[in-house]
Amino acid sequence: MNGDFEKIERRAALRRRVVRVLTYAMLTVWAVMVLFPFYWMLLSSIKSYSSYNSEYVPKFIAEAPTLQNYVEAFKAVPLARYFTNTLIFTVVTTGIMLVVTVLAAFAFARLDFKGKNVVFAIFLSLMMIPNELVIITNFQTITNLGMRNTYTGLILPSVTSVFYIYLLKENFEQIPDELYKAAKVDGTSDLKYLLKVMVPICRPTIITVVILKVIECWNSYVWPRLITDEQAYFLVSNGIQEIRENGFGRENIPAMMAAVVVISVPLIVLFLVFRKKIMAGVSRGGTKG
Image (cartoon, rainbow, N blue to C red; front, side):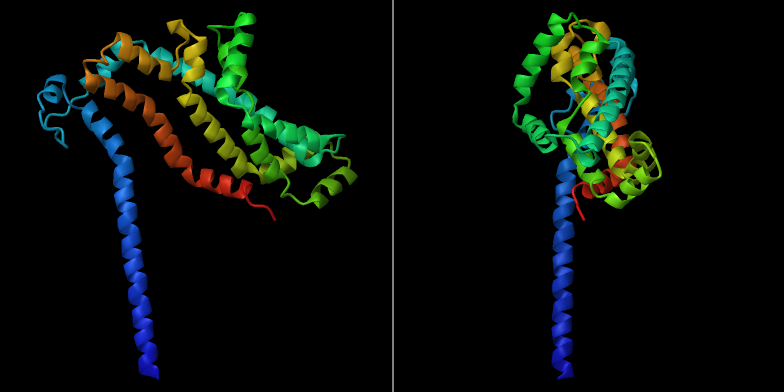
């Protein structure tokens, strides 16, 4: 009997090892497929123009790496100016969006007012509207207000998000009602309760919202491209297109890749540093009870 039990245990252990090996093998293949474009981008950016064009068969290592492409990327177009514009756009948009999102989520999660459920249902229905229709409406509004080629025109349509409000509302609703009732008995105002109790408790989700919004703003392309046609207000996403059209992008691929690396690095670093908080915030916001 003991011998049969040991055989079963050995077979189960062998099966677990095989499954584990296959799982890690599949994950490794998937990781290589995902990371290879980034590796190729970085590799191309450190190859000289002549070396890149002389490779009839692509090489997976750089024999004579150079940083000259990065110098040319900043000389071809005002890339530093694009970075400044993007930083202003990202910081201001994220800050205003955070205030609007936190206040709206608190109102839907904790305050009682007539028609709250109906208003929230209508609010969620906005997620069903295609972005193209919203962009057209926003473009007409911003143009009529004379806000084209301004920071206000860039920022205003991006200061709210139905999804982030919903995510934070679900997170706020996980906080026991007893805390809110006890705070009201002590004479605490709604704003003080929000700032002193709810925001600290829901900090992981709020950090997640901030990081996702920063990534969204940094990658924004369609709206900035549509609402700005002056180089002084271009963002880094528009800068890439400007490099391709009027710089060296169609000919000097290594320098183009260098510009893409420079633009991509901040987001990659941001995600690597805060990846655990992003996952924790999303999972917390999507779990009730």
